[in-house]
Each structure stands twice: as structure tokens, then as C-alpha cells.
Length: 64
Image 1 (tube, rainbow, N blue to C red):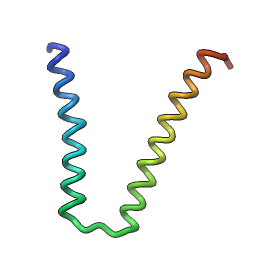
Image 2: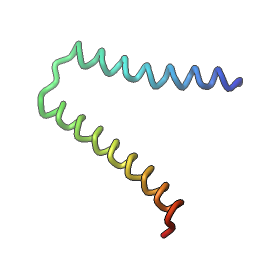
Image 3: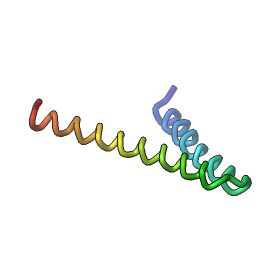
Image 4: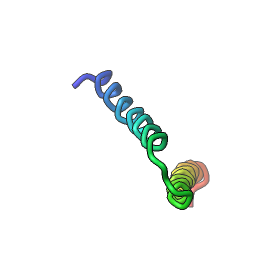
């Protein structure tokens, strides 16, 4: 499979998830508790990804 086709498919997959989530959020009525839970989970994932990325760079530059 060509690299450009793989990039296209991965881009469609990630972009499609955003569109599906936006459509579900617009069409359904979620409680504030559920919205808060989803946002808390998303922020936790974002913080852990950022700290993992920064830790790798710090380890490469400064060592253990």
C-alpha cells in the first residue's frame, strides 16, 4: 500500500472521529455530569501524553 494512501486513510479515520463526535454532541442531549466526565478523561489523556513527550526529551538531553 502506498504511503500517500496510508496517510489519507489515517487522516480520514482521525478526522472522521471528530465529525462523528461533533454530530453526536449536537444531536443528543447529554447530562452535565457526562460532559464533565468526558472532558476530564480527555484532559487526563492530553496531560499524560504531554508529560510522556517531555520526559523522553528530558531523558535524552540530561540522562537519568
